[in-house]
Amino acid sequence: MFDALTERLTGVLSKLRGRGSLSEDDVTSALREIRIALLEADVHYRVVKDLIARIRERAVGAEVFESLTPGQQVVKIVREALAEAMGGERISLRLDRRPSVVLLVGLQGSGKTTTAAKLAAALAKEGRKPVLAACDVRRPAAIEQLELLGRDLDIPVISRVDPSPARIAVAAVGSAEERGRDLVLVDTAGRLQIDEEMMSELEEIAAAVEPDETLLVVDAMAGQESVDIASTFDERIGLTGIVLAKLDGDARRGAALSIRHVTGKPVVYVGTGEKTDRLEPFHPERMADRILGMGDVLSLIEEAEAQLDRTKAEELVERIRRDRFTLQDFLDQLEEMQKLGPVSQILDRLPGGGKLKGQPVGDVDESEMGRTLAILRGMTLQERMQPSIIGGSRKKRIARGSGTKVRDVNRVLSRFEEAKRALKLMGGRRGKGRFPAEWLRTP
Image 1 (cartoon, rainbow, N blue to C red):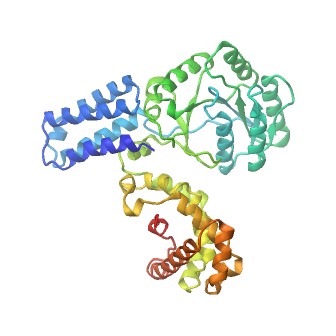
Image 2: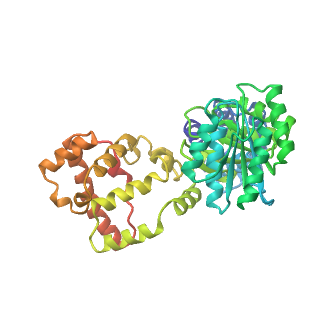
Image 3: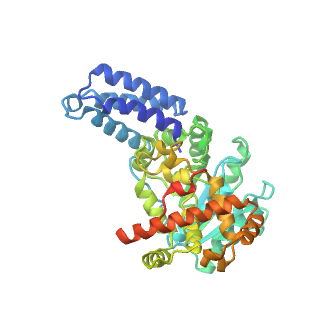
């Protein structure tokens, strides 16, 4: 997520950790490198200035220089300063009214429509009953996109009841009341740039439905520009929070560090992928840990608990103990693993996981995962339950059906046997049935 910045910061701080004592010159040199790393990540210059000043003030004190582990103390100070810059603590949405209304605003292309569906899915898992209001009547196919997402999530979408976006929003609130639903998420139109017509339309919608939360969706890859966008929206319609979309992209992501510090508005969620389950609550302290390469195990555990099927896991453990692990179980495990997102994102959340990228254990090829899934799905249920019946002719059929080669089928079968042996041992010792990432390594 923050690969380049993480690599630079961990490199700087690792030098300090390895020293038995620190001088003021050591700290000054490290802060200079931290400043450059933050600016290169497109963190707002005002945020960088304040961060460095805050770290310097605390890092040159007696508690650091007289500490038995001065390097660790500086790391702790940097971590706390990063977390404070991003807000310090998790801010949740305030949705006490029935139905509550959340207004989503932002520029065209920022990801509002997808974010509306993601937020609806996330809040539905928390027990809310959302309704989506398709108030973007300007962008071609915007309404169709939200309706399709709503059908996939089994969430009602109110649209086309009136040419006026404000009246559509009001109709959505009325529909929620009639259906006994307690939440309305309003998707609005954007522009390539902020203009008076867009702001007037948003003000009209806000006046009509009086939203409990007004969330700005910004593209995390926009860098410092996103901070200016947030300030302008806040001045005109009054924001209550920020959603950072596309935080999983390849570009610099300084917005995550800048936007709260400059605007005073909390980041409440971050988007980490295209699928509707790729929306995470924003925890400043956990994000600081990820930036510094310390991982985010708590979020990974929470997502695993939400996404993975506990009953399936318990049944799998029992089959492993009885030495009945099959290719069907192997397929189920891969599909469960996919629910947590790309393997690279899982590594990002493990302490030191970023260092595994490019190393043998972390050299996990997502395309290899796809081939493995295609081969397993190309088998019949009988073949997955009884791998011993898969002979030469069956391998050729499976390879043709999955668009792979016979050697790929052989490789999957070989890895299955390795997994079966290892899981039998692991199940006997711990009672857990997860397989390590190296079985998916690029051959």
